[in-house]
Length: 292
Ligand SMILES: Nc1nc2c(ncn2[C@@H]2O[C@H](COP(=O)(O)OP(=O)(O)O)[C@@H](O)[C@H]2O)c(=O)[nH]1
Ligand SMILES: [Mg+2]
Picture 1: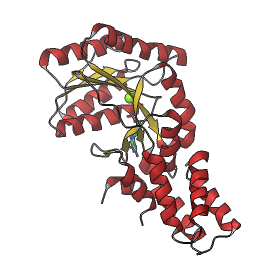
Picture 2 (picture 1 turned 60 degrees about the vertical axis):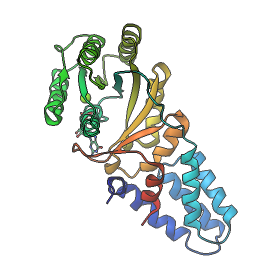
Picture 3 (picture 1 turned 180 degrees about the vertical axis):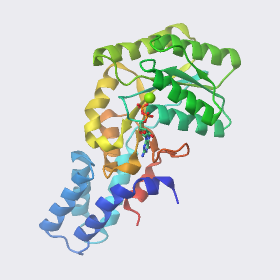
């Protein structure tokens, strides 16, 4: 069974059966439509997607209403921009997001996945705010057999990232993944610190493919949008990883998050172990949500 199917279990349970019940009658009355609308909202699909789905149920009139839901979901999700193809070498992915969303674990999972694809990887311990954060990344490095570039606690994250990229260039390593802090004394400081990592790498490292991936916790549902905006305003975010899909019924938020930010979800986290990271696939997502 696909991990995404298992990962969406809670969302599906809250969503699918009540929706089927509401839409089971061949001819829909207003009450059934209103109920369906409430269920879609509660799965955190957002206003726009909910309205479009309801509209297409109405348009379809009689027939398979669940199929109408699935078709509209798929067409909404197909409008999401495709992930950009990074050009340059090494590929440098800076992982950003607030504290506790799953940045460091996602880095470990990504390292394992990239290595499984035959790529060489270096990790950069750019969360220098806490000593424990550096150790935690080191642990993922050991677990996945990936070298970790680190400096002492409190050092400049941009310098750690720079060292890691320089080392990757010297050794011909394919991918550098940079961990970052999710919290500093103030939010402004955090954004400045992250901005500096980008400036230093962009200005002083020629030919690299520099990306920022934003990590969001699915438990926050649509509330993570505001959090996301704080990051995307100042930083060139090219992809999203939505973590902890397994522990929430708000998995539907994956749709408004992509719609509003215009940034594709690249991976979803579906558990705490190293293999619990799945590439986000549009049709798999819809069938995991709708499929029984
Ligand atoms: N259930 C579940 N837990 C996760 C997932 N990703 C991360 N976590 C947990 O979330 C907690 C915070 O993760 P961490 O990587 O330290 O977050 P960071 O502060 O952003 O670096 C840890 O207990 C992780 O095991 C996921 O996809 N599913
Ligand atoms: Mg961390």
